Figure 1 (cartoon, rainbow, N blue to C red):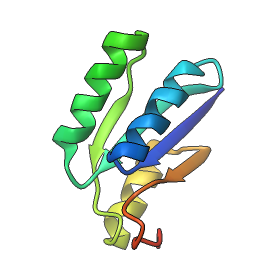
Figure 2 (figure 1 turned 135 degrees about the vertical axis):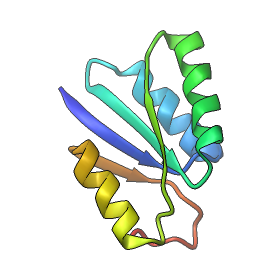
Figure 3 (figure 1 turned 45 degrees about the vertical axis):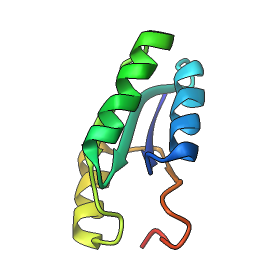
Figure 4 (figure 1 turned 180 degrees about the vertical axis):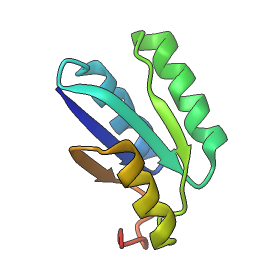
Length: 91
């Protein structure tokens, strides 16, 4: 039904990714992005194991506008959930 891009792979990002995976009829494609791709990959692996849902991962620094814009254009999400560090206002 729709694509969602989750930015941030901390505690809140982990919970959001799991909740989106539990609603895979609504969120048909999920991407988790963070500065540290290995954190995203770990969360994606846990989600696959627990819920049987594949999610995509990417590295992105939300403070770098061209990098963020490129990811958004490449993935084409219908919704973006920004749960990056509290001091980051998504540009």
